[in-house]
Image 1 (cartoon, one colour):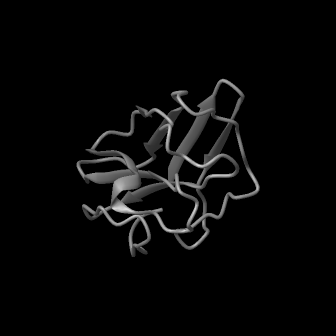
Image 2 (tube, rainbow, N blue to C red):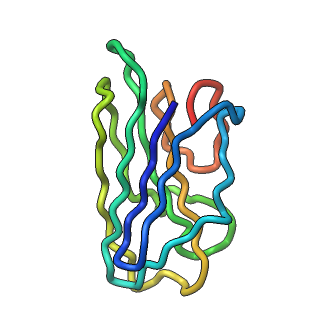
Image 3 (spheres, rainbow, N blue to C red):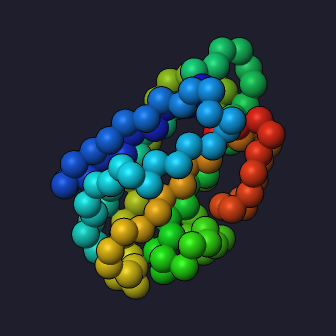
Length: 121
């Protein structure tokens, strides 16, 4: 179970994962973030114990439908259930319009934005 909240000066949305097969398509949800702005993503895992969860966040700045290594805006790991945050700056090279953001929680360390994960969200 994972929790994600995205906040920008133009709004926010929250999502708690459920029984969705490890993937949630949230393209119907959106918030605005201008070039040069710094949105914040708050995320956490509702797990107990010492299991490490690995987190990656990607933004498809060029809007080509692929989360490339160069588009990774955050990477971390944690054994805590406490919320974590990541803040990044929307680059001047980002295309305007709808840009997908992918937040990955996985039990294995990964840097692939377009992968699928047997244990994670």
